[in-house]
Length: 119
Image (cartoon, rainbow, N blue to C red; front, side):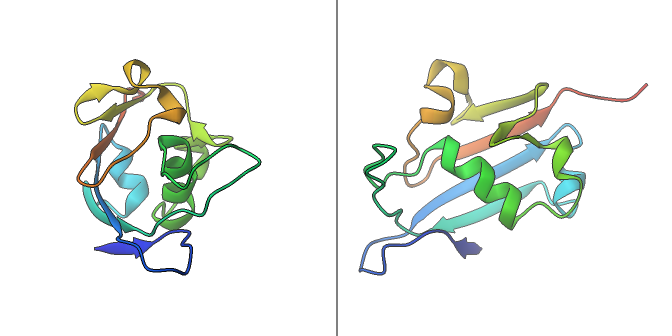
């Protein structure tokens, strides 16, 4: 299990997530399709209004910085995913749950699927 994340330094339970990759994205992550994550509690961020909850907007750069093994330009553009990558939160399109603002909860499954293929 991969454990890390920005923590408050105080006691608090870690959040466990399952990260799934397919459509070729797994090749950018050491050819591993499933990652079990344990993320520490986030610090509150008064500037952004974040109350210490992890969102998909927090997770994407964390995944890029901590799990991606090569070619970050094929996974992210800025702090979001590149066009052509589908994002599912518990098998639901992230566009229905708030996209980058979608709050993550213990036990959630986040799936990234590449729809971009050579030919």
